[in-house]
Length: 626
Ligand SMILES: Cc1ncc(C[n+]2csc(CCOP(=O)(O)OP(=O)(O)O)c2C)c(N)n1
Ligand SMILES: [Mg+2]
Image (cartoon, rainbow, N blue to C red):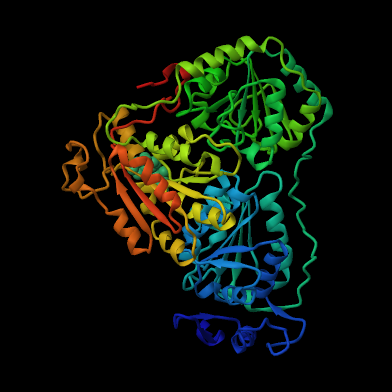
C-alpha cells in the first residue's frame, strides 16, 4: 500500500500537505474548530480534561515562568503558535525576522537576566537556522530552551517536506535534546529541559516536537516526575577541607592573581568576588565572558587578559605564583601557548563543571563547586597574603605605564574613541551593551568598563557575527527601562540586519552604534600581520573599488557602501552618519536621547589594529604593541 492511501492528506497553511496516521486526523479538525479556546474548555473542542500537546507545551512554559518567547512560525509549528495565541496574557511572542535572530534574541534575554531564554522555530529550514544560536549558547554556557516543530512521527525518516533530523544535527552542540514522540512525555520533558538548562553549568536544550504530537490530545500532569538517572550534578557545596587548603595557599602567596570568567557571572558571584578582593587585595584579570564580573574601574581590575587583553593582565598572570582560576575554561584565546601559560605558579581551579578540570591545563589544586558558594566560604576564613603591597605596586606600575590606548591626536574618529565616548556618556546609566564579532568587539571589551555583571553581551566562545542586534533586542525586552546599545561592525550588523524590522514592529527601541570601517576589520588585521596585507575578500564594498584588492587610499565619502542610514530608514529607524571628530560627542548624545530605535553610523578608518596582541598559540613574550 502506498503511503498516500495509508495516510490521508492534511493541508497545511501553504497548501502543502503532510501525512498523519489516520487515527490522528480528528485532532486536526478539533484544533481548527475553535482556535480561540483551549481544547477541553467549554465551547472548545473535545472532552473537558484533555488538551492538545501544543497547549500542554505552552502551559508548561507558563508554569516555568516564561514570559517571552522568540518564535518564527511554519507548517510544523503552527499548532504551537495557535496555542500561544490562547496565552496572550501570559506570554509575549516576539516575531524575529530570521530564526537565528530569534535564537540570539532569546540569548540576549537569557544573558541579561540569568533566566532561561526560549526560542521556537518550525521544522527543516527553521530548525537549521537555530543551529548557530544553539551552538553559541553551548560554548558560552547560556541557558536556552529551543523548541522546534518536526514532521509527524509517521513520516520521520522519509525525507518528508521540511524534515531535518534536528536532534541529530544538534547532538553535539546542545547540553541535552529531545525528540518527543508521545504527548504523555511532554510535561516531564519540559520540566527536565528547564532543569538541565539552568542547573550545574547552564546550556542549551533542544525539544523537537512532531506536529502530530502537538495535535494529539492528552490529560496533562504538570507535576510529572523527572527521569534523569544519568544527569548527576556534582555537589555544588565546596568541601570545608578544600576551602581551608585554598585559604592556606592564598595566605602564603606572594604574587597572586585572580583569573575570573563567565562562571562568576553565571553563578551570580560578582558580589562575593568583590568582597573577596576587598578582603585579600588580590588583583583581578577577566576573560571576555567574565567582564562585568568585577568592576572594570576598580583599581585592582586588570581588565581583560589573553590575546587582546591588557599588557598588565598578561604580565601579572605570567609572573603570578598563584593563579585563582574562577569559573573559567582556559580557552586558547586566553592561554596562548598552554604550556607557557601561568607556568610560574600554583593554579587553583574552581569550576562547577568537573569536565573542565585538567581539560586544557593541568592544575595543582581544584575544587568542583559553584563559584559563589566557594567564594562565600572562602570569605569567611580568608586572610590577605602578607607583603602583597610590593606585588600590587609592581602590577600598578605596569597598569600605569602601558594602558589601553590609541592615537588621540588623529583628526578623524577612531573606533576606540567612539567606544570610550559612549562609555563616558552611559557609564552612570547602567546601560546594557552588546556587540558583533571582530575588532569593534575587542575594542569594546577594552574601552567600555563594565561595573556590573549581565550588562555585557557578546558571543565569546563561538564568535558569531550577527549576534549584536538580536541580542540587544532580547535584552531590551527583558529590561525595557534600560538603555541598550549594540556596538556593531558593518560586517556583523549586515548578518542579521533584518532584525531592524523586529525592533520597529515590536516596539523595541535599541540603539546601534556602528563602527563602520567598510571592512571585515579583524580579518584585515590578520591579513596585515600575517599575510603581507594581501586583501582576500575582506572589503565590503563593490569589487571594482580599488580597495577590494588593497589598492585604495582609505575610504572617501563617495565610496561608502552600503548606506546603512537609508537601510535603517527603510525599517522605520532614525539614524545619522558621522565622520568628523567634532560631531562624535553630540551625535552619541542624540542617539541616546532618541526615543525609538536609532542607528549611529560612525565612519572609521580600517587601518587601525586591535592592540596589544599576542598572536595565536604564542606567549606574553611575543606580545605585539604596535
Ligand atoms: C558568522 C561568522 N563568519 C565569519 C567570522 C570570521 N570573522 C571574525 S571577525 C570578522 C570580521 C568582522 O567584521 P565586522 O563585523 O565589520 O567587524 P570589524 O572587525 O570590522 O570591527 C570575520 C569575518 C565570524 N566570526 N562569524
Ligand atoms: Mg567592519
